[in-house]
Length: 257
View 1 (cartoon, rainbow, N blue to C red):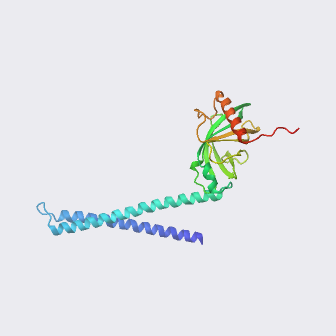
View 2: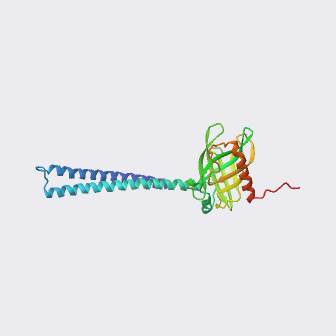
């Protein structure tokens, strides 16, 4: 039944568009008649008042038809684009597996600056990228795609999703088409009121090592550099920021004795 209705709608739309083109052609022809009538009625460089009125009516009528049809066609094209956008947003929202109360996601819909520690060739380094969650139009979920530059210089496409449970923000990212290696970040105290949040991340590095690491989300850049792998001179300052920020809101328990 849905397919039959879709076919019927498509046929109806095609017929409607054909009628619009015919009416547009009629308007052009009517305008042409008005101009031609004026030219044919000219005698000694002058046109009689009656002929001027007839020519004016034909030209105005034709111009009005052309303008109206063009306006309708432009509006229809705009409506189709709007409808398709609404369909895309709805489909993406319903297929997302990480869902939250949409109101609680409002605090996370920002262009975040993301900093985290990983291991490259046996050395710990701070990395930088952006999470443009403000671009996600999904309802009840956050999902964006970003380009991540690997240490080799190649660029990979990553899907980044986020959800909120109580005051905890969880961010899950993975390379497009790769379900195995997932980077999970947890920000324990996320209320949306601060400009910086400090959490813990769980990931398998490019060196195939499973690590628990430091992660930071900031509404403003913490460093001037936007290189994917930050310079070593910045590592100590980022370590200090995370140490102070994370332990200010979270008590890390010592070993049991």
